[in-house]
Image 1 (cartoon, helix red, strand yellow):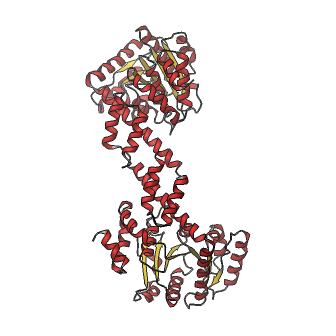
Image 2 (tube, chains in turn blue, red):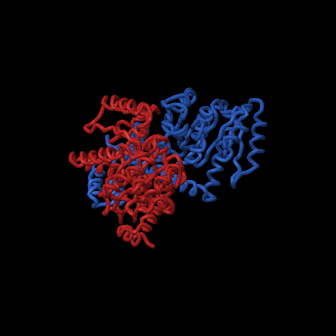
Length: 313
Length: 313
């Protein structure tokens, strides 16, 4: 099936078409993505993009599952893109807690997809923003991108999401670590999960103290949850909603979208230049131009200019 | 004085104009070189470009000076570009033996110029080929480029010269080292200098033995010299001349010129792409395009294409 037909079916709500488009996005070369992105792009921009990140063991999958249930109860459709930057293979550890995700398997208003990182420098796969675009175009109200908080991942997630939830667990020294890793800056909402354990209040307090040292216009609320029982999940969802309302009211959402578009355009352009650069040999054209240089018909700079124009096609 | 006038004076044989052009070539940014190269290029291609390389201590400067004297005696004008890739400063060690070069200071048929390497990876300065172009255009019959044989320097010299002389001294284990460094392949003529010392014959024999293991159509002759006394210099000059005759007779000179033009065009183009890449921000254009992406008027790939076209100006 060609991309156009596949995208039409996706827009019409066919889940199998969605799955196939995501596979093409994940497996395809950047060049092959072009058509899909061009077809989908006009249909995007409606979803609330929510990033969830945090160290291994804080219970992100359980939290995600609980949030899905909450948003479904509020009548919103939810897609999840689970990215595991620590693994080069997909379908992996991040959704190891699939039992909980299974709760939503029969719900047509929920779509869950795992994605491996083909990570650049411990970061997210370059296909991640494109996959979010696909889920956005597919019409989900909320699109969650979930990743283990390692390396560059949090920062990248934050750059892709409207609202970034940073999840922590008590007694793991996470608040300090988060500060060190510069996560305080990227969090729009903090979630201290496993709040039935000792030290949850202390973790929350530490977070608040550090946060007040320096923050912008939005002071990220801190919510305590026990995702396994659903405790505090409604309040977490409210906080996320409040953040969205703040984004819209202040115009920050548009600014972030613009920043996102900017970095995406720049990334694609750089990737394209980088690829041409890596492949740069010049082929027949360099032969032809060099002959003219050797014959003194053309100087080397003029030839180089012609070469650059020639390979830009 | 603008470049055009300066180049006209250079072509008319004014030494001061030559010096100023070389300074502009050496100091100027690559962009500033463009005009000079464009003006000079049609006047180049006549000189016999001779590379001289070898380890420190083999007596390259003395050898160069002796070769200058020999070529002058044969009625040919000579320019020398002495490149020191080991020093970031010009005017340096390579021509430390200036006393000998001084022999030629009053001779209008000789021009000597030192040049520092702003070396990329121990190699020659990127301005080196352009400086050779200047000396070629200035009308010298022979243009010598002399460098200490370290790192990539020999290979780069060989790629720039019609004829490459690799100088060695006896008893320095140079023959073996030369083999290890891959110099056997780049040498068109070997010179065992300081041949009045013990071991000169042995060095020459070792060279010959190793050389015969694998060589192309031209078996580089090995000449023994004592540059300080002039012994063997005429034979060395003859060997260089024979190589030039061979280059012309076989068409290899044209092939080398074509290769040289090719690598020069490619280097300039890559340098230009690299610079644009390093400076790549996109400026106002990325703002404008990103706004259209955020407004869904344009998809990010199309915007990236427009961005690339936009920054190519």
